[in-house]
Length: 170
Image (cartoon, rainbow, N blue to C red; front, top):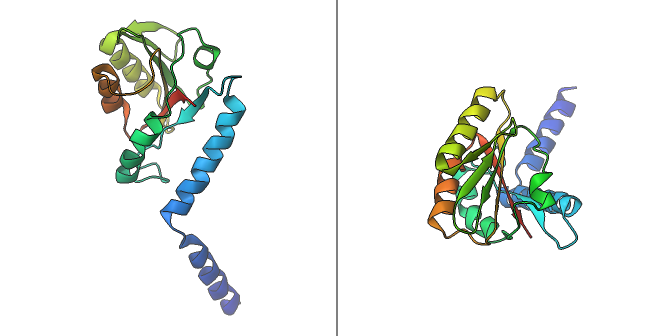
């Protein structure tokens, strides 16, 4: 019995000795399959941003992967079904950045807020309702790319372990 237990522990330890890169590769493959299931006819989809300290990614690794993930963003209209019909896997809110840089947030109660104050209010409401799961936030924009001051401020506010971010992308 002891021999079987030792053999099992050695086998499990060898299997757990895989690199983080392999685990990340598997996660990206799973995310890619999910993205295909959620995509529209133009390849627009919802992409999961690596979450810091998620168990899959360290804060450093998630931060390192963030720019490459954000580069995959795609511009959509506020009325695009991928944004309006998105089903949050936990609970949280949606954030839309208009072409002029204004922000519109739809909270968990389907109420709309404007600007950074609306975003902060949606975040506070979701945190008050949080029950163990990370919050989910979908971010979409009328423009692609993440170099604007508004978009950087949103990412700086929301890129944290307790929030799973999603973007509309390709």
